[in-house]
Image (cartoon, rainbow, N blue to C red):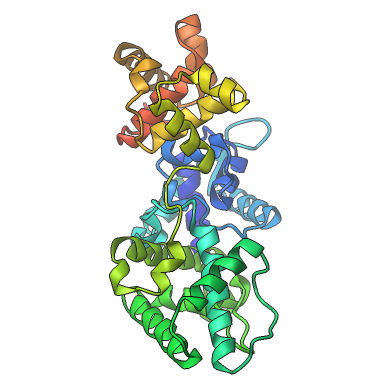
Length: 359
């Protein structure tokens, strides 16, 4: 099953360096500095926020299944960190990589906005469908005032008649779906609601398509990211729907973006913490995020080339990307912050994570 291959892949990528909770938080898209950095450090960024509806109970049940099937084995007494067994490696090796990681999933530039974008798209399609049936009163699938207002303004700025509006939305969606693999287009369209036609849940889609829910979620996210990428890159081809993305499109979180702007004025890390009334550790998190997104012109102020090389040499020697062993080895010569910066910089440069069981 796809879900087993996906979890085996992530266990292999995390190489026993993080607990299963780290994998779960990655799939859910937990917006913590740890989860974001891990997604780059272990080269699994496409899977961040890819299965946002996954419950912890379902996740734990699949991990237990993999352990009972002797496809993974624990490497700690608490049974929270795992590596693949020989059978697990064999099973993963025969699973097609293009099915495991659809190309659209790798488009992560708009990943911070995809949740809001999906809410706007859902509400727009439902609203236009109702209007085309002469109905202006219905139970909306999204009830967030900010989302509702954005969709309302978009519709009011559109064509003068409901029929024209419906044709424009239909034609642009149709052209979008033509750019996608059929299974992705079908997955996204099946989740949309219309007038007296509720969108499927992921579980319903899984049953209808004979896939598991995780694969349906991955296909949906791949389609959604393809769509957003087209809106950013070719807005003229989709002049109406691309306006769903009008506004903030930075790959940075809003708070990291604020820190970036203050850095450009020449303020130091401690100056920014004081000005924003935030802990220094929080600003450090922002600088690590900036490094992961390659917004790092300021990096030499906090991490020299010699210090970076020293940290990475120790990380490779110890065969780890965990902070504490590296810090214990280097002692007071470096700070935890410098270790995080070095690991982040090298993660986005493509430096391979050395697995703990490699010799």
